Length: 441
Image (cartoon, rainbow, N blue to C red; front, side):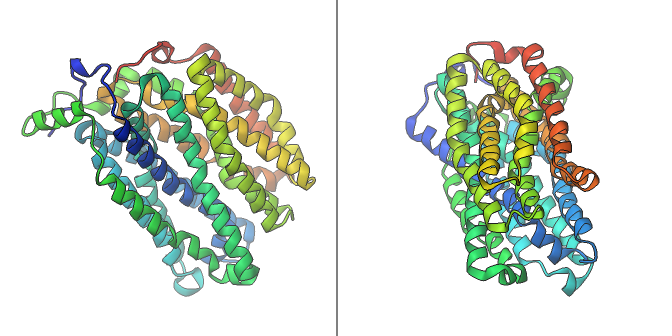
């Protein structure tokens, strides 16, 4: 076994190399693109996948079953996050980043190759779930490990700005997915797209993943990590990061999970629910995808601005302001959905801007609320538990509430309650480690 990667005294505030820092930023951005490209495709193309992989006797049941596949994939994330986070603490970031990109790429491409329910029967949804599990295991460590790698290689006084880039890059994958889906839908026509054209976007994840893998082969961990790996070779571990994360940092982990709850629900609304809701309300496939594309265009700039504001005024203030807006505007925004093109675009774009503004200080909290020797484990665990329990269930809850009430207003009340909870944590339960002006690496 290897010892945990504890920092050496001389590594408290190490100088950073600009070339290495830029490569770290690029590898984090590309990994996020691959991860969220698949997530967005699954949501955007859920209607077509329900027709392909599930019995067609009840469209609503098939759609709910497709969303259940999304939840199953996220259910594995806390387990995968513990494994990937622990591996990051014990073997360094590069090992995990190479593994995650391989798993995510394989799981995504495989979905595009699966036979339909009409061809192989019940094996089709089973294989779909298996692909989602593989992708979920890979994604379980991707975001936090890549963000940790990026933040540790960048300038300490601009960490929330860098976190803004990490958050913003999660919109690039859905943006690419939306553009590809819209283009292919227009090219094939509705019948051709339903017949199999929807598979092509999943296959295109292959070249994107291979490009990211090639770049990650050349990255290096921080000197303290490489030194720890060399010194630990052949020695027994002196501590267990998972035990440390749970026993000594459970309070901070709980605070971060609750702090991010509103944004987790908001992210899944943008990436999965809005498009499906607009299509089922008769808004039209192309107009719904157009609204989705606009969301992903405004998302990255909003995330970067949120990071700049957090570095200048503090992440806590940005979170209080963002969740206050969410609490006040979510119900009106949902009321506008499907009423007219202008009102719908205003609602989803405003919703996206607020959701991305709070993303940078939240990413900063995911990683830097914990000390370096347990950071990989704790960050992956709190991020994936919150994403699974609160975020991934949002589309299913939204679809169920709409089917039960016939209106989107019911889900808007649910999300408002979640945002109020996050606001209260930002006001009264902000993790102590994040109140410091400087953080040790």
